[in-house]
Image (cartoon, rainbow, N blue to C red; front, side, top):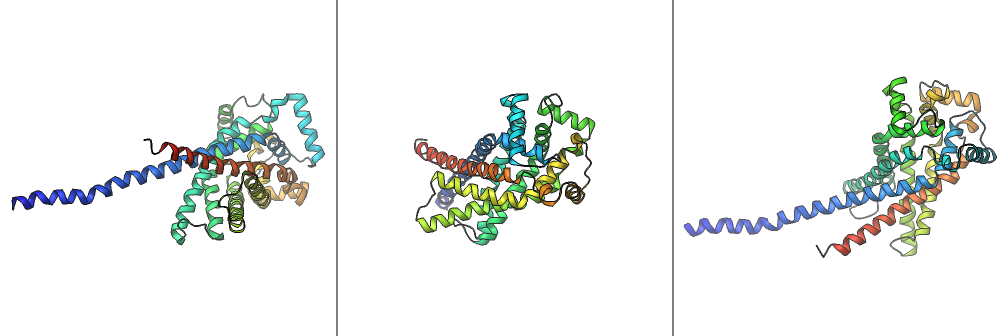
Length: 325
């Protein structure tokens, strides 16, 4: 009887030990995966946005004014900005962009990976490419999640892009002045058109990129596309995504900068009506779209490519150092 009591715990420990050892290993793998996605996304956003910052600032300045857009006028604005304020002024507001875009891109790419996994499990596609509808939903949810978390930083960035240096000396100064003079609610002005715009934008961007990679793998027999192919797929994704959501982007910028541009916009529909009445449907709601067709594909192509290549690099580094630990 005494022997029976002693043997019981020994057998129990043998059964449990492998299970408890596996759980921390799985947790560590999941943590590494999330950390890799966050780091890769942050770098992707920073590189892409810095590359197109002068074009981005010029686009915003046209979006929030009643001036008619043309390639000639855009070039003239860039050139005059350079002459009057110096070369680095073309990147004015980019520090605010980085403060926003680094967490935004990190959250968006990381969320996209997680939503893909969740939807894959739900629809029974574990380890396989999602079908079209879940692919679109994963992108939309990722963009919405990132936009909700980082929206006030986007507001600040828009204000810095359209105002002279003397008005706002720093990112913190923008927050302080808006809070004092216009109220904290102003930091979320334009939030609704942002969310409505990010659903088709992020959804179509991720959907297009993932679809092109899937089609490429099926037809070429290669598991992964080359960097130039990734850039091309990302450019197509950016072109489709931004074209679909552009009118809401114009409305968002008008609402964000209303306080410093002498306008009052109370709702999305009234803002759209005023823009169409004063500037016309195409010239108003699609102002600067041709510049976006240059800027957008470059930025999105760089962003997706940087994310994918950074992910691959981090995985390789972890595999090399893994056995030594």
